Amino acid sequence: MPRAVFFDMDDTLLDTSGGLEVAWEIACRDLAPELGCEWELIRAAIRREAREFWRDEAAVGQWRTRLVEARMNTVRSALAAEGLDVELAPRLSDRYAEEVTPRIHLFDDALATLEGLRAQGFRLAIITNGPADMQRGKVERFGLEAYVDAIVIEGVFGHGKPDKEVFEHALAATGVEPHEAWHVGDNLYADIGGAKNAGLHAVWIHRDRMELGEGLVAVPDRVIAHLGELVEALAAESPLAGGR
Image (tube, rainbow, N blue to C red):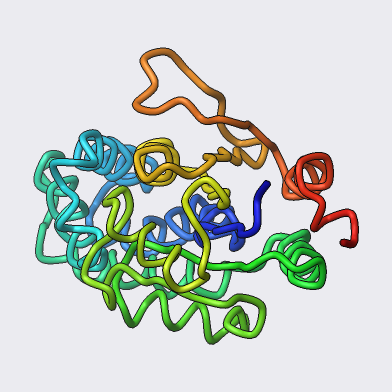
């Protein structure tokens, strides 16, 4: 029976992608006059270069803790590919960051889920990839530390998902065995593949934004759209959720 639940943070507990397109549109519109082209051309080029850059997540894993630098390099590549002034890449990248950061917010079901599971006796942890300062800032901004027993940040711990060491560290911090833990996340490669390799029950959350396609890098044990479905599943599986 599950005794612990681990959560990814970005796009699982926090909506970090919902404001992405608006932020890029504003940034591209602002710099388009200086670049001498339509903003849509810039946005399309950035999207294309970013997709290509992150296509093989294993090959570019070292960039997860250098996301600002990775984004700037992607913007520079996009401008170069379109014959535009690459010297404006830092300004364009920074303008995007200014717009996207305030648009990050908690999903409506995040805190209620954490509160409810904690009250029912589950041990909880957050396992997040990314730079130390950036991810710590999100944790502090939304007060997440008060709801969980452990937080594992790639930039602090030194390893990130899907490395087995990350999940083993969270297991040790919460005092449970792999078969007693579920991990919830949106990334098939990092969250699902990593959790399954470490012996955890892997729950893929798609937030009504994604669909399972062909040639999956990892197959989840369970698929949910929202955290309410997780609570229902745990209630069916675990005596803890029944109030024992």
